[in-house]
Length: 110
Image (cartoon, rainbow, N blue to C red; front, side, top):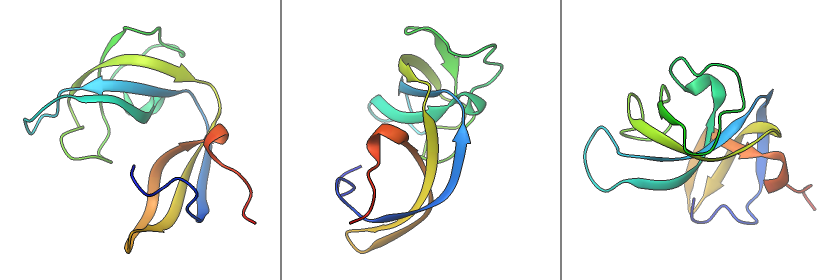
């Protein structure tokens, strides 16, 4: 998301799960969303055992982006890091429980 690089945030939740980058066609129409980071394993319909292989076709059961819930998607990549929800302010917009960031995307506040 633009403006998040280097932004301050407060961790509001942490979860041990598999996170996926996905490409999907929004159910609301419009162009495909390419390489969206991140959707967690629990936000997939009937996903089976993690991790899913790259190229696996899935249906999203997530609502943290318009047009995502029920969308058909393709797994682009996965990571098995701790995932986080954060509270932050980006360009004057307050975001509460923003989903998702992975461990490797975070650094301690200065």
